[in-house]
Image 1 (cartoon, rainbow, N blue to C red):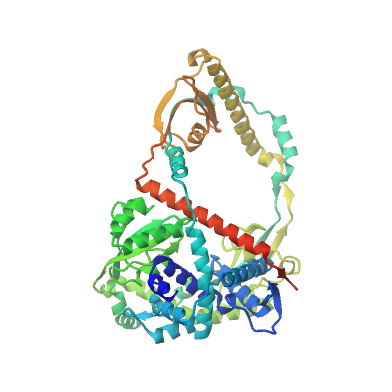
Image 2 (cartoon, rainbow, N blue to C red):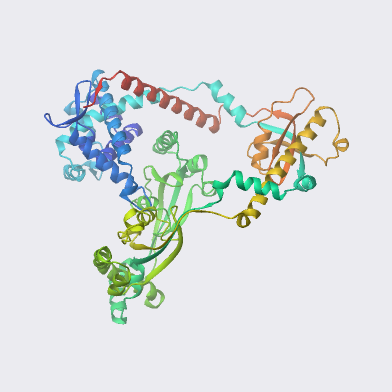
Length: 617
């Protein structure tokens, strides 16, 4: 087994497994991997093995922090603690089941195996050689001891071996792949007849009685919710910085201090962008293997990247400095050495592989060119020193005050007003859920207290109070009549268009011509794919939902909107082409095999979980 480890530790799969292990350990800590000490209270027992309360609570805390970090504006009050505890406990039970299964299969690493694996991990190497100081430092930064890390690797590595083995065993038959591609690449020949809303305008008439009836039958839709008018104070780092004066001497000194940083560094990046989905890991693994085998990054970008613009240029994004790319993308790019390729980097656009092509630095600009920028930076730095202090003063003052005028005068801040804030929020800063919840709380709404000081953004805090409360009320008919009339007109127009389209379809099926039906003329389209741009997406969905026409007869269908109806005559279905030696076939085959492997692994997990004897106190 030691020889297998030595041969495979540098492989892509091993790197992914170890990467997952490192990430999971750094996020969850050792308690998420191994059990606690005997004698501690337990939250569950899995086949006789305890999951301790200590490891459970630590993981709950870590998961709460992780979910907070994913919020645009972190707010602990928005966390669903019961759901977090339920999710964490289930994940610990599932993890323990998998560890026990690996042990029952005799999968284990000896001390020599662990040594071989650790010494070949690039995270612990300096200049290509294992460095013990780097290893110890990295492990300690995870909050673990060396022995804990080794034991965690011993357990987690074998679990991931089972996972990788099951997933890689997935198979997709060539015929299944070919059949999907035949359908996916299918094109259709069809004709369209458009019936505009003007053709049925004479049939649509909305009476006052219909408006009245709709209003009465849908009265709940015309409720004006309860509202408050609020007074509030905003404390922001930006506004605080605007009050700070910077002298010319201070500006000159700051310019000289920043000289090295002001020599702007720009980096030329290339990337391969993969859509984030179930097959993303498998696709990234394939690309990394082909890169390791010596294939060109540019060629692989042209083949795989969904960023079609840069893909044509081999993934080249040109030169850019800091502050241009997504934060995760920028962090990875500026950590690379020239010619180096990153690991998988997740952003809101998908999953990237990034290559650093070149680095260039510009000259330091003259002070006159960047004086305003530096003055703002220096003022903001000084404001940061005062912001936390003033924030604390505002929180204490507003908590004890009967209004906001006193705290505002004391700290030189402005009291502002907002009207018509509902329980769903209002204009900023009342678009923050936590602030609105406070505003409508019993203490603030009924007892007349100020809200707590709420952080509504990055270095922006708000305290508010209710000036006036208005209960929910029914909107009068006169105020909503025009909206009701427009709604009814759109509905009846759509119904009339649908009836006209069905009338034309019935006539065509009976052998009548468009001229006999008093309709317009056909517009023909040949060999159009599902994503054809010449026709609206809704019409194309209708085209591809129709049955294959029989012999010389057409299949008829319709697509109706509020503006028009389209009558569709499907003339022919053209089978999609399949190239079994092409990249499309290969990629789909890998995706389906990976999907099947994931399915099998999920079923395997469920099987183990259902067989496990789980006891909860």
